[in-house]
Length: 504
Image 1 (spheres, rainbow, N blue to C red):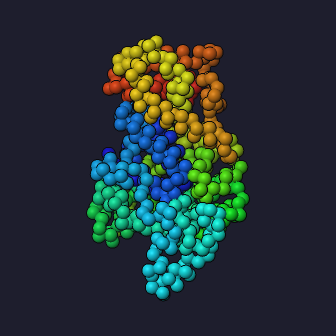
Image 2 (image 1 turned 30 degrees about the vertical axis):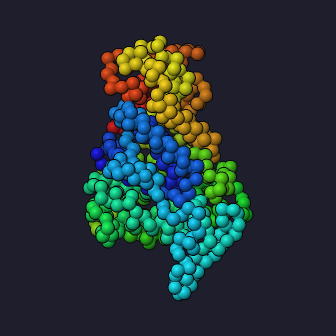
Image 3 (image 1 turned 90 degrees about the vertical axis):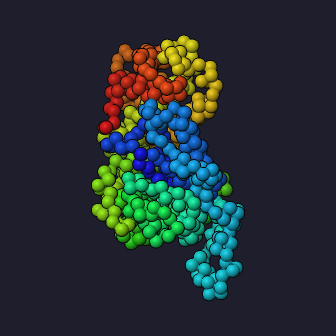
């Protein structure tokens, strides 16, 4: 199976990857039925970033679910792997979803570049290149060379570009290059208005396209001509004003313009990417807390991050014949943006363009219905419903093991939190009534008259589960739970709510 290596850079990279994981859990697939193994690599010096940590936890739960239940059950049907899953080594860094940046913890930038050991001319050059002021993690103004990097590059891509260049010599990069096959692809996710993402994208792209010049990398031929897609996320949220913070909303537009000007000559202008995706949102709502890193940086999920995740799905839908490269240069590159049908402050499925709606509406609705049943009625079905009792049974042992108690329930709880955060954000994405009865679950979609009766939502869904379970064969109780609910919820939502199945 071909692989997609995803480089998710900075806080925005983690947040978009979080949304992509939700789409994959729901069973969203590329158009054309192409199957890929997803290998995420999160690149962020700020290991205390809460957005990073909860994305990592989500990925681990997803991976654990597929290891127990397999990937042929509808939900969780795309394999997500670490680099150590590809080539087992026992290496802690390769067994993680996070790239192990070296020498950034509790380190000032001048210490990273060994400023005191440089010759006098080199020190003078460093003073020129990294002149200016910034604010450290304690809110104190410092020289740029004195910035501590363990909370990221706090809006300083010139620092980030130096530190992230270690990527080309890393064990992780060697593993990717040595195992990169002709049908594999790469996708890079970054923001363009901060420090880590703006610095990381061109550095990583340059190292991949320049792989032939790196004599320490085996298999670099396929990597140099890899089909590469990239997403540049432009400003889409506001932050509170804080004069002591190095992050200022007023800088977002200026930094975006500067980065786009650079990309014009060094990224898109030289054919480095096959497919370039741009996204932004001028519907700026309530400001986020201005947190450069000390507070953990935990932003509520945003519709733009969901739309950004769809860029990855779109990239995998592009035929290989349209993603050709020659000597590290993309032939006929494409450039894409994302739009909605109506400029609505509250987006539902009705505001999505037809292709997008058909891709995600049914699948996200299925996962929402599955979550609702697990929360409200699953344990009550034990020892009562034939679908639960028939072998392999969902018995007491099943309900007490880590598959259900930890991985499935934690993931579905995180899914509910993700939906609630987007519903409460501005612009909001709120296609569901999460706390209501099943007939009102999907906004704008009413089930057939008379099918539901008050207070019997789960009775009727149990009936459908029993019908679906008849004659079905499952390898384990784990695969039974995932596969049975995927088929039953698909039947309910297509036949009763009129939702359309995605294109094959």
